[in-house]
Image 1 (cartoon, each protein chain N blue to C red):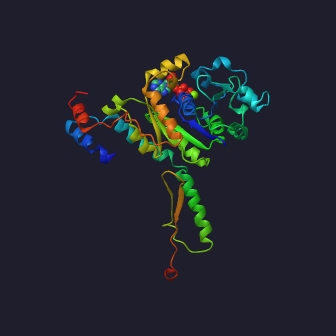
Image 2: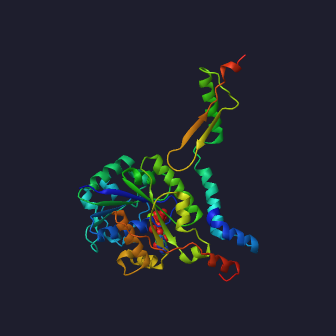
Image 3: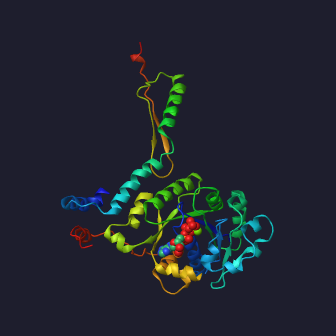
Length: 93
Length: 265
Ligand SMILES: Nc1ncnc2c1ncn2[C@@H]1O[C@H](COP(=O)(O)OP(=O)(O)OP(=O)(O)O)[C@@H](O)[C@H]1O
Ligand SMILES: [Mg+2]
């Protein structure tokens, strides 16, 4: 994209012309694939997150507001990464 | 010795799977390999007509699986090349006539005393596709350089990986060099960048493919052609030879881009 595209982008802007149609195709494809490659919907991710919070909270006091769960993208095996901050005991009342 | 089973699939229909299997089958046989091409597109059989063997069919894949005949009886020998056989699909049945487990067993049986088994997959992500990859050791994705085909190819790559069949290799078909130079067609490089899999080869758009298909003579057996050469090269790469890629499509140069802006191209 940008690394190869700059002369086109620059000249196209200069001459006020549409970029070559394949650049448009590539950009559209890249966007649609980000979506397609996502195996879990945001709603399902939220459900998983809620469940994880319930389970972990049984054993340790966690910071629910700042708990995050995300899916790493790309080829090959996808991963769920959970970031669950533990409340430090001294901040407890 | 036992054969490698390689499935050619695509997601989107009409991108060149059957043409690819016919010509790679011929090319691999011309390399001296013992080859079987298997039409897994049950209900919509095509490989027989593309290869020009349609008049010799007696039994088909469903007959073999159901035990109506022995495997050897259903295999049709292509007399134009040494050691090339076709196992035709059934035309009057549907994809559910064969199960993935039966395909695995069939592939096991086909492996004996052969070098390569090439499977022509139906389009789609349904049972026909599942059957076609069930017995495969390796898979090849074929796509044309357009948004719909590339998107579907990406989906299929995901499904193949999820089925633990490894990562497929890529063939880009129907490249039109002039359109790529004009910036009006995705280049092979663009497709590789998007799909992030290894390239096996590139086939140019070639009218000779249509002419040869009309005659039932795969283009690799029909005189000299760019596409025929491209298929021969892919066959060599499948066999592990390090054949340089034909440069058929080039990214637009700065000059091309400038010319386009001035409206000369
Ligand atoms: N490189 C090419 N140049 C010109 N025509 C081509 C090329 N490759 C394929 N074709 C033509 O495109 C059409 C579809 O090809 P083919 O039947 O091989 O696709 P397919 O993927 O097997 O289709 P299906 O999904 O229906 O099984 C045929 O008419 C074929 O001759
Ligand atoms: Mg086909």
